[in-house]
Length: 93
Image 1 (cartoon, rainbow, N blue to C red):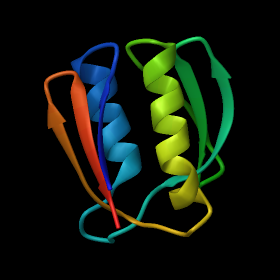
Image 2: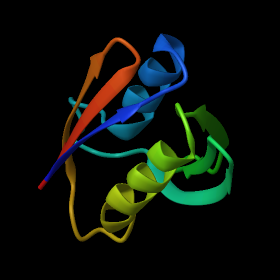
Image 3: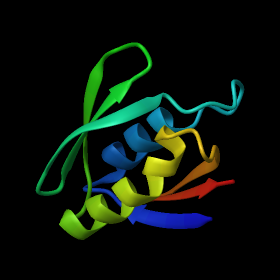
């Protein structure tokens, strides 16, 4: 499955992609969604830290949260995350 989500800007897209997929280790750092406030998504990472990611709007947050839930539940794995300006294309298998 593949989605493309729009972030608030290029920096947020880079941050999302870096938290999502580590190519060398073939793993995802995000362990759960802590909170959603409008277009802001707060996620917990494997190292127990929390990070905020600003997406373009609330619809993008809903799409991403729905998509990533099966990865958090370990039903799927992220296989790639590619940045296109302020968009991130995410593929899971």
